[in-house]
Amino acid sequence: MKRYFGTDGVRGVANELLTPDFALRLGRAIAQHLLETTPHHPPRVLIGRDTRRSGAMLETALASGLCAMGVYATSAGVVPTPAIAYLVREGHYDLGIVISASHNPARDNGVKLIGGDGYKFPDEYEAHIETRLNHAPEPFPYPPADAIGLWQYDEREREQYLLYLLHTMRELTGEREPLRGIHIAVDCANGAASAYAPTVLHELGAKVSVYAGEPDGDNINFECGSTHLDTLQRAVLETNADLGVAFDGDADRALFCDEKGNPVDGDRIMTLWALTRHQQHTLHPPLVVATEMSNLGMQRRLEAEGIQLQRTKVGDRYVAEAMRATGALIGGEQSGHIIFRERATTGDGLITMLETLNLYRRLGKPFSEIAHPFTPYPQKLVTVPVQDKHAWQTHPEIQARIGEAERALGARGRLNIRASGTENAVRVMVEAETPDLVEATLVPIVEAIRNAFGR
Image (tube, rainbow, N blue to C red):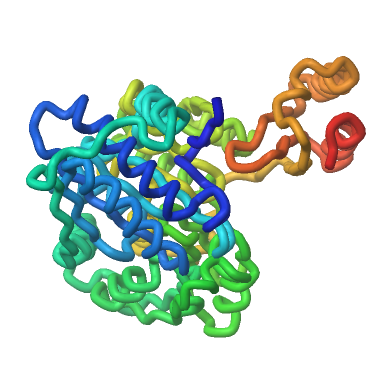
């Protein structure tokens, strides 16, 4: 059976895997699942997309498949992924769909599913949809003409999310323009944040220097955004900004720079937020949820203050699941994909920006003095392209090198190896007390994988 859904929905190259024909079939399969599982009819779906050239094409085909089966579809247009998560639960939709490939290049696109509660669609539901996609091209009949669903575009959805962001910051601070006097450099990645972040910051009183905020369909994530932080680093220094923030294409993650141009990742933001709340006696439970990739220095710092770090597999859905199970107030990834449970059900780059700015203004110190709350262990991640991304798990030589590395690291570091959720690749990460120990344990494993399965 072909597998379409990865760690974050369906993802591929537009007009290769993600053709209009496929999107139409996917829309029909999703609709059939909703018709069988939703207690009321017709089911209601909200769709959003980022700024890629292929987005409108795929949205139109997807909406056609939904409506053809009797589902009602509303388009919010170009919006951040977390906007759909918020609007779905606030508007009582049965499903949210985001057409985006996040931080990937413009030629890629994807389809993410968000349940009516605002959380990522469960794996078992995606499996049901995959089963239908793997059947014949026409696995179920069309309903009669009078049962076709309706489609509409509603700009009010976009406005509602903007108002929510403004209300959040004003509620946090008790001020209408709490950012007055603060200069912020913003890299919008030519993506979904372009129409949101500058507007929100201006409305809250900040001075804003905007970069990569003019999407043209092809420049999303191109040498900008959270995956190319050097653009933001230069911007902060050139404009003498107090700090900088960079988003990815669909604005579900945010990374920062201090006023000296030093990068500030998700681990540092989560640690700063958790330590501050712990000092205020409002971190209940005293717990942060992070993935296997978060730095060991973060774990050591939190534990020293009596805060537990619980790790999950890589992927925001696993972080969200653990947070729901434990009641944790904050969780996320080193990449800047952070969930503030009091504010959102998924990673939200704009909420992350506002929560961080609130800390900055409350603490009243240069960002460089507060944004580096722990000393990170040296860490290196290598992505190895392979033909089969799971075969390493049973290969004798690779397993031998892994065993040697684990014995060498002992309590002085960590090793993490995993199959990529979005490409045919194996990701190998080592962190240890010294860079030499990182290299000594990482290189033999990477070489063994390349020799056995590299392409």
